[in-house]
Image (tube, rainbow, N blue to C red; front, side, top):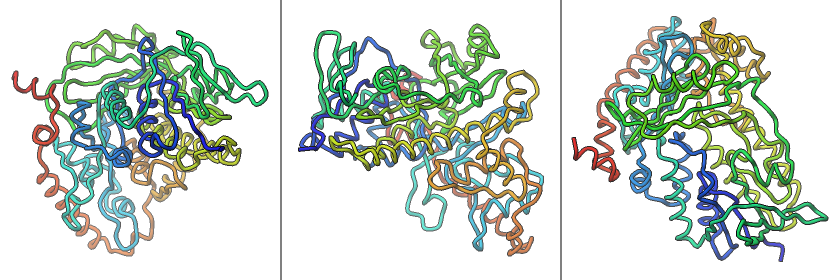
Length: 508
C-alpha cells in the first residue's frame, strides 16, 4: 500500500527525458505511472552537448542501438577535450579518455614518464595515449577484441544535438508507456501538515497529482527551490563565469573526434562538432567583460557565420543545499550548475538517476535514504567543482584581470592538497567515488604546467635503460594502433551517418 504509484516529472529537456527514459525502462508501467509535464512555450537551455564515456552505461541500460542513437541525434564520437591557451597563451593539450601508457611492475605509468621526461613536452605526453594520438589524427573506431592491444580498450563518448536527444528519448519513453502532458505549471499544492507536494496545477486548469516529483524545471527550480526553499550554495567566488553566448554554425574542415575549449580574455569558448553543424558557446564572466565585448569575441572566433541569432544564457555556479527534499528530487539545472568545461552535465543527470533508483522510496520517504542521496550528491558535485577550478587556478596567464584573479584566488582545501601532493613526486590519487580519475588529474596538471620537482622514487624498480625501452615500445604500439583506426568521418559514413550528413556530402 505504501508503494509509489505515480511519478511526475516537471519539465522536459535533457534532464527530464533522461529521467523519463530510465524510469520507464527500469520500473515499467506495471510498477507505477510516470507522467512528464512540459510546455513547448518554455524553451530549454540545451545547446550542442558534449559527454564523457559514462554515457555508454546509460545507453546500455536503456538497450538502445548506438548507431541509431548517433544517427538520430546527428552525433559524432569523442575521444577527449583539447584545451587551448589555458596554461599560457599559445599552448594546447588534450585531456584524453582512457589511460596513458601502461602501469609496470606495480608502479603507475605516470611515475615512469616523469622519471624519463623531467622536461615536460605536451605533444610527447599525448603520444602515450591512444585516444589523444587518434584524436590529433582525426581517427576513430570502437574497441575490438585484440588481446592486449590498446585497440581492445578504446574509451569514447559522444557529441550530439541536445534538442534531438530529448526528442529521441521522448519517443523511446512514450513507446514504453510514459504519458506526456503539454502544459505550463502555474501553481503547486502542498500538504498543509507535511509540506509534501501533492499536485501541480497547469495553466489550463489541469490538476496533476503524484507521490514522487522530479524537478527538471531548469535554473528556476520551481519545485525544489521556489516551493520547498531548499537553498543554494554559491560557488561563483571560485567559478566567476556567469554568462554564455551561444549559436551554431556550419563546419569547416575535418569532423574532429574531440571537443575544443579555447581560453579567452575573460572565460573560454567551446566548439562541439556534430554531423550537420558545429555547436559554439562563449562562457564568460560579466564582471570582467561586457556582453557586447563577449558577443564580438564570440563572432570573431566562429569558423562560419552563425546559423541562428546568438543568444545569451545567464547562470550561477553552485548547487542546491538539498537535491532531494521531502518528495521532490531535483535533476539537471534544477539541482545546480557547473560550467560545461569538462562535459559533466549529462553525467551528473545520469548518476543522479542511478542514485535515485538505488534508493527509490516508498510513500514513507525514509529520511536516512534521502540523507545518503544528498550526501553522495554533494560529494560528487564538490569534487567536479574542484576539478573545474583546477583549470582556472593552474594558469600562468597574466594578460587580463580575469586570469590574474583566478590564478591568485583562494581555492578549496581538497584541491590545494591535490596540487601540493602532485608538486612533490607527481602523485595523484582518486578519492572514494570521485568522478575524475588519476589520469584526468595528471592530464590537466601536466597540461597546465604544474611540474613535479621529482618522480615517485619507487619508479626506480626499473633501471633507466629498462624504462626507456618499455616507454619506446609503448610509443610504437600507440602509433601503430592509431594508424590502424579509420578516419572519424569515414567511420560515421559507413556505420551511422544521419540524413543531414548524407545530404551535405551528396551536395559536395
